[in-house]
Structure formats: C-alpha cells, structure tokens
Length: 435
Image (cartoon, rainbow, N blue to C red):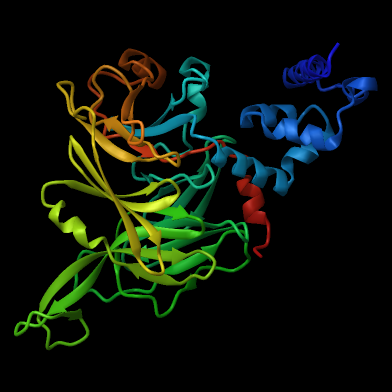
C-alpha cells in the first residue's frame, strides 16, 4: 500500500470513529484511533483538521481531548479564519425580511462555485437567526463570519456557524444611534462603535462612544471627533471601518466659497457626502473625499459604497454600465478608476436585479429585487466579461422550508460579501481581557 492510500485509510478510520462519537457512542478509545502505524504526527493532525469544514471540525471535537484542545486554541481558530478568507467564496449568504405578522428574517445560502456543496446538502435550518423580530435591523456585513442585529437599545452579535450569539446593551442617549462592529486583526480585538444619527441639522452633534468586547470597561466617549452623520451601512477592512457620511457646510452668499459651518455669518447650509474611516486600534476618525469625477455619473446612475477585492470602493451603475473607483491609498486619497460595459443587460422581463456588492476575487453580485420563481443571483466577472447564474431554491421549495405563503411580501434581499464559516467563540471574546 502506498503512502497516499495509507493516509486515506487513516482519515477513513478517523471519520468512522468521530461519526460513532457524534451519534452518542461517547466511549471511544483514543488508543484505537491513533494506534500503531496509523499514528498521525500532531502538526499533520492540525493541518488535516484545519482544512475541514467548520461543521466537521465541531463534530470531530468529541473524538479525543487532544482534538478538542487543538481545535479550540486561539491560533487554530485564527488560522482557520485566514484560510477561509484566502480561498474564493464558495457560497453566497442572502437575507430577506418577510412582512408577515411575525416580520421574520430569513437567511438563505446559495452555492457559488461549481465544486461547492449543492444546496440540498446544506442544512437550511442551521441558518435560523437568533432574532426573528424585524424591529432588529440586520446589518449587511459579515466580519470573520459574525453578523449583527440592532435595535434602539441593544446589539446582537451572531455566529451562524456555531449558532452562538451575545447581546450587548447600547449606551443610553437622547437620540437614535447606529452601531458598527469593528475588528483589529493585529490585536485580535473586536469593538462596538455607536454614533448618533439625526437628519435635523440644528441638533447638537454628540461624540461617538466605543466598547471593547471582552474588556472590563464600560462604554467610552471618543472626544474631539469630527462632526458628521453616518448615512450608510459600513465595511471593516484590515482594521479600518468605512462608511458614507454627511458633514455640514455653509456657503458664503457673496463669493460662494464652501467652508465648514463654524460661524453664523454663513447662512446657506449644505450637506456634503464623504467617506469616513475609523481605525479600530487607534480609535481615530479620518474623512476621505469621494472621487471627483463621479459627479457626472451620479444624476443618472445608482451609486453605492462597497468592499471590492479587499478594498473600499465607490460604484456608479445602471443596467448596462458599471463605473468603479477603488481607494488605493487612504493617506493620499488616491483612487483607481475603471469602467465596465456589461455583456448583457441586468434587467429583464422577470423583474429587477440590483447590485448588492463585490467579492474578494473581483466578481460583482446582483440579486433579484423580487421573489418570483426562484431564489437566485448573478455573478459578473469583469476580467473574463462573463455573467454566471447562481441557482438556489425555487420559490416552491423556499416556501416549504421557511413557511412562507404567496401572500407574504418579501423585502429586497441583502447580500453579505465574502461571508465565511467561522469558529470564533463569542463566549471566549466576551470572557477574554482585551490586549
């Protein structure tokens, strides 16, 4: 027997042992699994385990105390996240809001790659979120596989892979606040940032507050932050949170100079769109000017902020043309610019598809604006100039799985860019002291 066949035999025996354990036979014999020539070196065991799906890793933790120890160590969890992020996305995570009496959130996973798991093999019911009430708004971002829900008073952080969730109370403020979850990869730290949001220009600006998850401290005020109002969903890229914001400006009536609204002498108030960045580790804000050439497209094009190939991007698009600016240097505020003509219109007779985001591998994802015949999406690759249909459940199966009726109205679906399986333990995050 060759070495390759021997390794297959070993893995087969491990799988059989873990399967028996998973089905209730807890009296496993570690010596039987690792005896004789079948013994696998510790480093090789780790390399095999880290390449398995998260669900299998969770199941295999009952094989032995050694495997439990290996797969729950922080360096293993971090390495698993890095590995998952380095491979092309294998599935698309969508969420709908069903406007029935319960107003529930519905999550749906679509296979993205040809070699990815078929939808029938995915446990649909494992995507049931801990929060069903639509009073909880669901943010359209996944950070290390974590998703957040928000109300006026609390934030819920959920790991769909492990089914674990935690609830964090927001600070008490007189005005509504928006909460952003940030992650600093250098210190492996998660922080919640809250900012007041008001469309009344005369209201006094309130300083943001921040909470480091796992620390013993309470919410802290970030003083001397720039006066602005968050206006969009956010993205966290390499330890920096980005979001669209408004800043107030006043225009001099005489020479039409645009200056910050600091004096009552300037009476004509205006709002200016910018991108605001926030360093999770430094806790410093920095404003970024939007691309100057975008203005000629925006009156007739939809525009959006998105994550694209691991960078923040500004996109103007319609059914045939997509114009994208990618921020290459935040300090110098340098943008690269590209224009793509779609090989076929995104609109057709069945309804509208809307651009929902980009992937780390450079595809753009379009999703149906209405649920008519199936739950599906389009993937546009601008390099290959191809559009691929991403098939999922047909509407009949969707209704059977999630208890939906023809009278239920679904909101436009949201898409989570580059969502990955995650072994991150929320309990560990909340119990570990911050660095």
